[in-house]
Image (cartoon, rainbow, N blue to C red; front, side, top):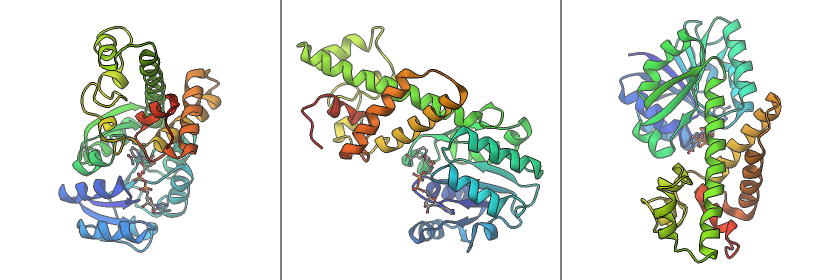
Length: 296
Ligand code: NAD
């Protein structure tokens, strides 16, 4: 049994911390929000009064925070220099590659093994312990982090050096945003040309137009396997989070001088969709905006 600090117990972190407790670890939790603290207490975590107190004497630190600015502040102010140098540090938030690399450099200069370990899978996977972790960091950092991450997920993949986990996550999600936008407009055009959506699915899902967005996550209700489209686009992966990831991908593309016109188009489409009030809906609901008959 190890002593693990867990900072950020929101929609995702709450379930992840509970799975570390179930695995037999002593989890010392901290969050700024009272409801998150109460849930963690109910799930068997001990509660610290600050992030700095949570990391005292621990073997491992896990953070699951909203964005890069929160991660940078928590590590600089409360983790680095306060957790024992032997502790492995794991940031599981989805943040920009540049901040992930800066924080990992600071941690490594102070003698820590640190990894970026963003996740694929939503709240249900966080609760069930079936997340996929994409891990960036040294071989040593990965080896130290793996046993903890395995208790919260079904797959733990070493993507490369510092920041590589974040890079894999946002590039994958950029491709997902692009294929979903393309799939939505293909179904709208097919229908306007007089094709039945089910017939178009039967053809395209077995032809060269197929992708995961079509075959596994079809944006048209009643077509293909059951998806959020069949539940009025509730649940699933919120459009606001897709927009967050597309923005991170575009920032990274600019910094790396990569030309990503399709990612840029997808970002604009999701920005418009979220501005019109669609942020809480599953990201496949974009089809309702592309089909202009929709008013949210
Ligand atoms: P959330 O907003 O529900 O949780 C974040 C928690 O961090 C909140 O409880 C907040 O109070 C806490 N927090 C913020 N600043 C803090 C600080 N300084 N100290 C301590 N606690 C602090 O967000 P979430 O949905 O749990 O997402 C967390 C991360 O996981 C994000 O980076 C998100 O992009 C990523 N992610 C989310 C999903 C999803 O489906 N929700 C899926 C994959 C990845």
